[in-house]
Image (tube, rainbow, N blue to C red; front, top):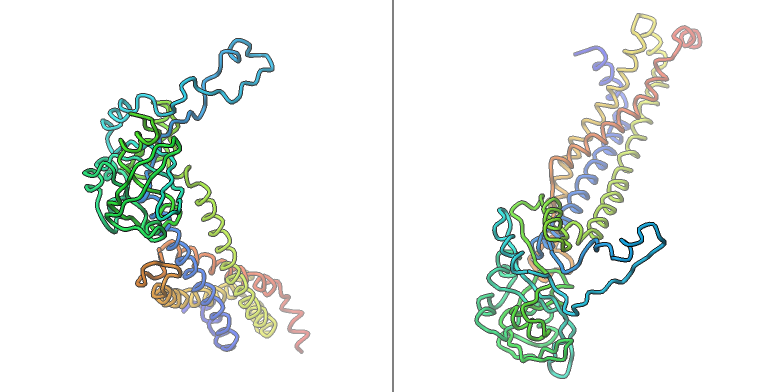
Length: 413
């Protein structure tokens, strides 16, 4: 065994109780860092999956992100001219040449597209009104773009294809309305047009805003209610490779002119909240490891004070300052290594326990907390723990290395 390692081990074993407390501090810090991070990432991954699977990866709308410069601004480019609120002459908004765009998208590899007309609808039942967003869809194409078919808990998309007056409700909305499969409800559009709609399906995404505030109709029926024949104001796109969403949205927008928003842009606020959560969680759990570093600092400092005479003797027999520093840094590394490995085991046990806790607010009684463990979490926790341990040991190690052996020996005598 190398001399420095042998001396470091002897120092730690000589103060077993303090060494054990320091190891436990690192163990708890590593365990809480990994377990809390895994729980947070599990929730975020679940929520992100729900969003991505339930919604298109790219959404083309009938908006122009950067409107063309108006004639007045072109005529007087250097003048103090401000042109705002430019409205189209045609009052019927929609994606121009939507059919041609859909055909062009259909020829592009790695994606599927579906047309949608999004509008507002008032559902009336038993004397009560329910305001919802109505999506007119092509059921066949919709099945290739979103997970609506997989989210159905009753009925089917085929039933919507066969029933021209069919409507698919969120299960939460159906419960609120007291409606079920086969029931008839009245739908009133903002144009004043109304229709008797037959419930042909119920869906559940787990996202309350969608389950309570969104319904699906046949595209032709929604166009008739909105008095917008052959008009679509949204084209939804699903990619085989979701990592290409930003680049593909930019390409599509540049080609067709209409705004194409990838899911990262659509849900940027939610992703920003996730980033803030991760920063707070990392800061709080990382603070535990920093506190554990103070425990190591206390142990090494105490050893340096108690072993001052021994350090002086080691210096007097020829051990260099570098070797002295190495001895105490090894002590910190040993405490950090043992605490880290024990922390891995405790973290695994904590993650397994968390994964068995029933998820609060879940509609499924068998649904439990989601935990997403990864090698990255263990690596990050280990690096932080070892940095704190070695850093805490290095400070008193420098003090020990600067000890004047002659002054110590004279003082001892």
